[in-house]
Length: 237
Image (tube, rainbow, N blue to C red):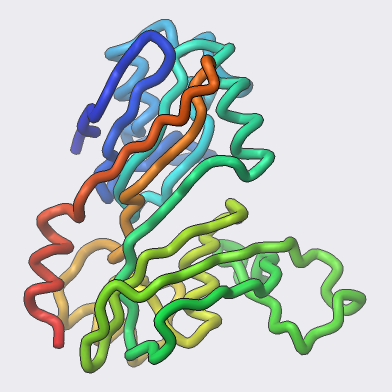
């Protein structure tokens, strides 16, 4: 599977990452990554970034999540984008389909997030738990707006103010509305529903991305849902 180029200039590259493609390798992973594909096309990216294993990578999307990413083509652009990510000035909007009907038209989830004892998962800490008993919890804020309400599902527009690992997935799970197709953050009954839907990915896509370029000009990009997610939308009730 290959990424799709949306826009390119001397400063940055905007791409649409498909589900199933990892952004960069880590540990013992040997499968081809987005970083590998980018290096073949843009060898100069080898000198962009802070880690040789992540050339040109300033942010990530989970393997089973698709959508927009910005790839800086120079170190100056990398530093500019990194600063905006750190200062939470980047616009990141996702589209997600969750189980259950959410009655509110909009909302905010602000449970702190920490690494779960299960290792490969994150966990949201309920507000009823005092910080002294969970000092490792990191602030995380997720906003959502309802796009469409079905009988048993809700289509959401999701914005994140922070960029914690698996933030949207763990927040929506803790909120009681797991993302369709997410077997990691879901109950057993939900995983059975995922299997029946036949979706081999998470129904989560980064559909809007905005940032300021080196001249201070705001750049914004937006895409629709991939075909496989549109097909699922046509089947759910």
